[in-house]
Amino acid sequence: MRIQELISGVLAGERRAVARAISLVEDGDPGLEGLSAGIYAATGRAATIGLTGAPGVGKSTLAGEVVRVARAQDLRIAVLAVDPTSPYTGGALLGDRVRMQEHATDPDVFIRSMATRGHLGGMALAAPEAVRILDAAGYARVVVETVGVGQAEVDVAAATDTAVVVLAPGLGDAVQMAKAGILEIADVFVVNKADRDGVGEVVRELRQMLRMGAARGWDPPVLQTTALQHAGVDELWAAIEAHRDHLRSSGALEDKRRARLLREVEALAAERFRVKAAATLAHEPALAADLAARRLDPYAAAAMLVREAGAT
Amino acid sequence: MRIQELISGVLAGERRAVARAISLVEDGDPGLEGLSAGIYAATGRAATIGLTGAPGVGKSTLAGEVVRVARAQDLRIAVLAVDPTSPYTGGALLGDRVRMQEHATDPDVFIRSMATRGHLGGMALAAPEAVRILDAAGYARVVVETVGVGQAEVDVAAATDTAVVVLAPGLGDAVQMAKAGILEIADVFVVNKADRDGVGEVVRELRQMLRMGAARGWDPPVLQTTALQHAGVDELWAAIEAHRDHLRSSGALEDKRRARLLREVEALAAERFRVKAAATLAHEPALAADLAARRLDPYAAAAMLVREAGAT
Image 1 (tube, helix red, strand yellow):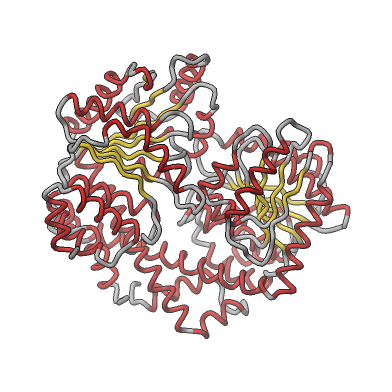
Image 2 (cartoon, each protein chain N blue to C red):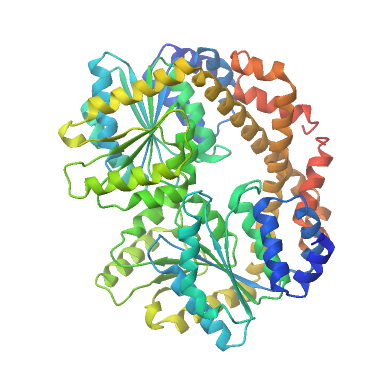
């Protein structure tokens, strides 16, 4: 499929074109630049929702429930399940998607796992482009589900309009999340599996941690769901929509999107420069030899590479 | 303290200078370039050991035990405990260090927690410079302990000569590690808390995962320790030393260090370029406006920034 065809297909909302376009993002395909240029004008309409939490809290089930509520309102919705790349796990994680199979035949639902194999800058830079593809394809809501609570997941969640952080009783994950800095970026908290013992404890621990954080003009609500029994999901949906309305009415939505766009461009530029720097090091054996022989230190070498590029 | 004084102090192995120098790394202080240049020639002697694993496996206790064995051989040793930055956790993680307090009065042991507040590129770029400071200060072994098993921890562990991955029964952490790609970078596996039920299961699960990985010329041993009872630690030390001997005799040590040095320089250069790109975006409102209005897409903007810097 040629890039022009692919762009037309994405803009027409064709599933096959959307799937192929996301594969280009995963692979860091050279055609990505043409694709990006071709779809960008059609983006900005989708509301994006991050769904982050430790393995086992029930994120996939919850994502399936969010899809159900969106479909009841006749909204087209996409779920992008973002996985770190490991040769060991592809299969297992794809298996999780089975939980969302009830939506598999709905033409207005798009569900896709995503890994990065070739995209420079990893998932933090690949995910936003994949989200723009889904946005351009006309999905009114794009849910980005991550698999864990590390820095990569924080970066991905921070690149959505509304970051939902999911916990569950008995996992002791609030502390782990605090360590990863994920509590600071949450707009909505959900304690899922709320029919289990210890739910009150998780909610209390969470609220205590939140009191220690800085005020932000939006108090993240702490909700409870039992996704397997469809309990609490309407409230979750309402909280997500309320957060977006808050961003819209306060003018913060445009500011937030603009700021993260600039950060993304800076990071994309830095990754491009990294490739240039690697090429320079490969083609200037004297520089690499000076480094190895400790005649030139890493910071001085980096400064030299930037200076030599005329970027001072 | 002026940079020249600081450099002399580090090279003389003075604790106060070493501590201050690591603080400069944490803060991304402008004096870092002078410091890096001043100490680099004195580096390369220390053997570096990564200690990575999920919270709760007993990494700090194990690090304390490794210190004990090193001291019994009269080796100077440093432990750098690398934490992701979060305003919530500084105290709690520092508390962990208490477990290593038995070595606090030993002048030939240096133990330090580290966070990054200002260093560009985060921990993956800050940790190697901190390790070089300890190396230049004459510590024969530098242990880098991380707090979790995310991508940031993998990056830090991959920047040591010997990456030790720690597990414990009952945590189900092997699968989580596989997802983070940490199994691929391990040179030595330790199942700590080996007096607990389920140790055999963890060892089996681990060996099964290892069989799925690619052969690498070094078969990572799977050891068992009960660090609190000093059990198995001599074997762990022997495995670490055996791995380094293997790297040395095969010539892989120099290759490995040279390769990671080049990657570090590329990343440092990319981070410097990112700052330049941000400045350009801030000073060219037309560029930012074109982006926001979707007349210019992120990939094209990034290409333009690199091109404008003369780096094509």
